[in-house]
Image (cartoon, rainbow, N blue to C red; front, side, top):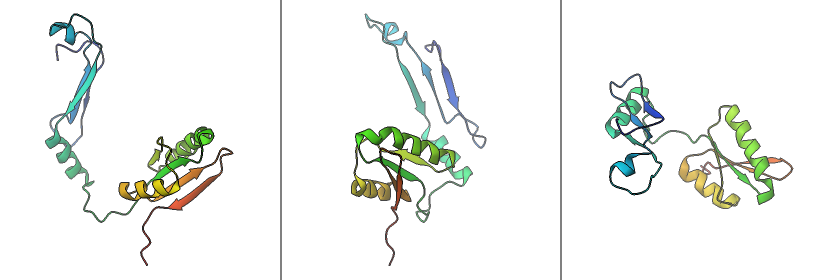
Length: 141
C-alpha cells in the first residue's frame, strides 16, 4: 500500500471477511522501479475466491434457468445516438439493467448479441426519440 499516492479504494461485501477487490493511484511507482519518466497509473486487483463467496451468499448464483432480463439500446443511425443515450438513461431510472450499443449494430446483430447476453429486449431508437422494443427471447413454439 505504500506505493499508492492518491485515491485508494477497497470493495467489500457484508458476507465476506476479506475485501473483494482493491486498488488506487500509484503515479510514482514506475520511477521507483527505475523508469526515467513518470508514468501516472491506476490499477486494481480482485480475489476470485472472495467474489465467488459473495455471489454464493447473495443468492445470485446462476443456475442456468434464469429468465432473460434487461435491454440493449441501439441507435438506428449515428444521428440518433443522443436520443438512444436518453432512452438508456430512462430505462435505467426505471430499474431496468440497460446496455447502450456503441458498435453500430443493426437490429439483427443486436438481437443475436442480446440473446447471447441474456437480455430480454432490444430497443431501437430513432433520431426523433421514437423507441421500438423488440423481444430478444427465443420463440418457444
